[in-house]
Image (cartoon, rainbow, N blue to C red):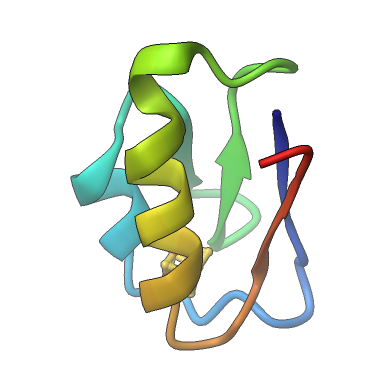
Length: 65
Ligand code: SF4
């Protein structure tokens, strides 16, 4: 499974970072969250899907969930 953050839609509330800091990191320069890993590991999949569902901007996309 892969995840990505749409820069235009990220509102910077950092919910994804709090839920799964192993996958999402807040970029202080870009003022948005970025995905740290290419492939989401099995143990983080549920949290990444949850982060996508809860993302207020609808900015997180997941593929291959
Ligand atoms: S939860 Fe969504 S809006 Fe909030 S920081 Fe993460 S990607 Fe951005």
